[in-house]
Length: 167
Ligand SMILES: [Zn+2]
Image 1 (tube, protein in one colour):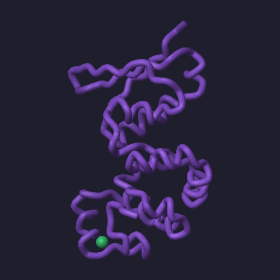
Image 2 (cartoon, rainbow, N blue to C red):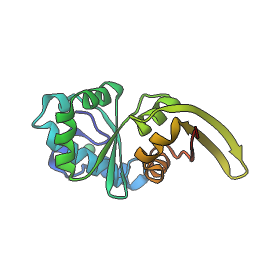
Image 3 (spheres, rainbow, N blue to C red):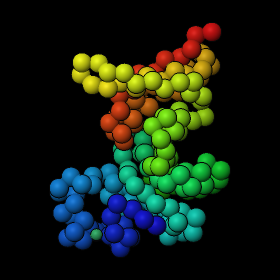
Image 4 (cartoon, rainbow, N blue to C red):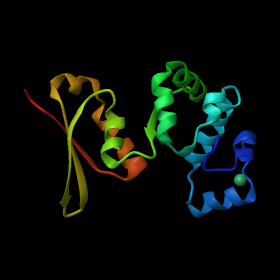
């Protein structure tokens, strides 16, 4: 498995001097380190997960976000046992997001399985806002908008404005 830290560090849970320096310099975060170590534990018992490439980890409230390559996210979505193993190790809800997705694809992944109708960007005096329009009121009940907004901010520094089509 590839992670933001060396695979040896991920296995032992102790950072080498080089990774320690990256952490201090802010090139990687403590959440990246925690995610690498915990996912590595699961990978030691699962060949599928051992093939993953973790590009980022982020703690958002009581949830954990793992940013992985597209095939890894697909593997987790198509095999709920993998997701359960990972969530079992993390002991919290884990979100799986695609590091290789376009901005639109990233947003669709955030709201999965609810359907995104459109994504538009516009500028406000204090920065860029990405407006997401979701299909219908039914989706509104399923989506934790505040959580999704926090994740978008933590992972992509994206300000999301979420609207639901009223029909
Ligand atoms: Zn290292």
